[in-house]
Image (cartoon, rainbow, N blue to C red; front, side):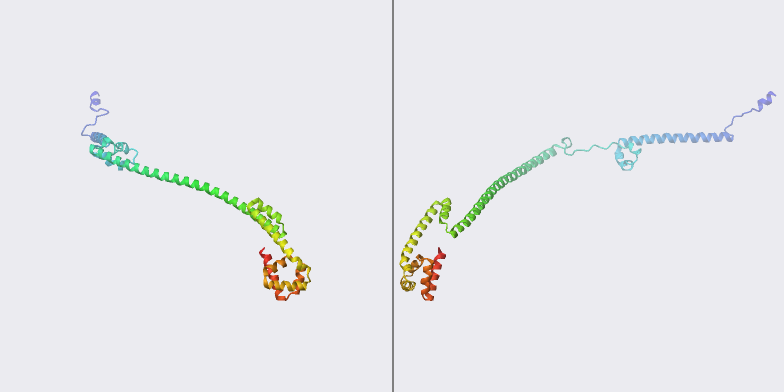
Length: 272
């Protein structure tokens, strides 16, 4: 029994030649290959990451357009290069620095000229502004003067109306009083003229008294003869007569002569 049990074990081990052993060997080999591939891929990705991150041979910048939009792949990209200032002294040669210095000096000179021109324009503008202010002040003064002149003209027009009324009413005293206020010399001259007129009027009145006392027909004959010889004296006699006596004498004269004398008297009155 012992030998039988010993010759027939319950769980025999699979051998390499058995089907189960072959399957296990193939699976182990496949897993080993896959593990090796994974390791190689990891190593490759690590090396590729290092190459991209350090931008070896410019590969990082070369892959930037393709990886930039991927949130994972762009982690392998190198940092963006800092902007280089081409005008920084450390980025220029000595010759370029001298050239830049000459260019800056020329720009400063040009800006100085433009600044001087701008200051001249500003000065001209300020001068024109001052002239404008002065002209505005002169204009305001002239406007005030014009308003004053207009007021004086209105007063003069009012006085002219008053004078016309005084003349129409025969108020010589009021007329003289007005001129004495605005022009004493003119008032004195007018007063002398009034005195002269009064003397002439009195003289004409005295000259006409004999004719006023005569018969109208006789006075008409004498004055007609006087008219033919001395019209001025004849007119003076008629001006010294009162209206009633003048009408009676003219009535006795011939119609053409009476009309001529009446027209002359009328012209003398209008002239005055």
